[in-house]
Length: 238
Image (cartoon, rainbow, N blue to C red; front, side, top):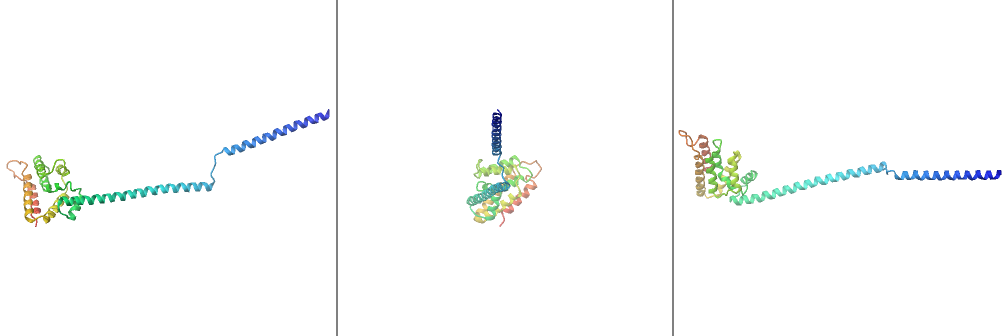
């Protein structure tokens, strides 16, 4: 009887020990799985390498953007240079002569082959503005002269004249007209130049007399008369 009791106790102890071993193995497996499922963390050295690569990538992107803009600026300047050279050739062809200073000033002012034909009417514009404002009669006289000279109402030169009549032009326009007149004089036979100058001055007088003034006052005001004198001095300059 005593032997059977001892055998039973031994069997029970063995079962308990086996259960403990199985539980420990399960706990160890679960712990390993929990470690495996945790997010991977970079070591310090890996973090430094990662940040360095990111900075290099951003630097490369900024560098590419900079040189892309520089290239675009260079190309734009090249296009502008080519466009200006082409505009210069067209302007010289329209004028019929080449004067480097005049051509540069005209192009800088935005006057090209399509608008330079308006330049000849500049003295008429200044006569109209001499009294401080342009009357409807003065405007009509100038626009009629533009049409008489072959300018069509759809052309840029025609619109430029309209702009000068609406907004008083700067003194630089007067300087450009003087340069234009001087260059034209050098390119024309003296007799033809005198005829053209006389015809232009007559048109300036027509603008000066276009506005009806009150009875008892001079037909031409003092500011207008002074402007006519300035124009005649430029046209008769030798």
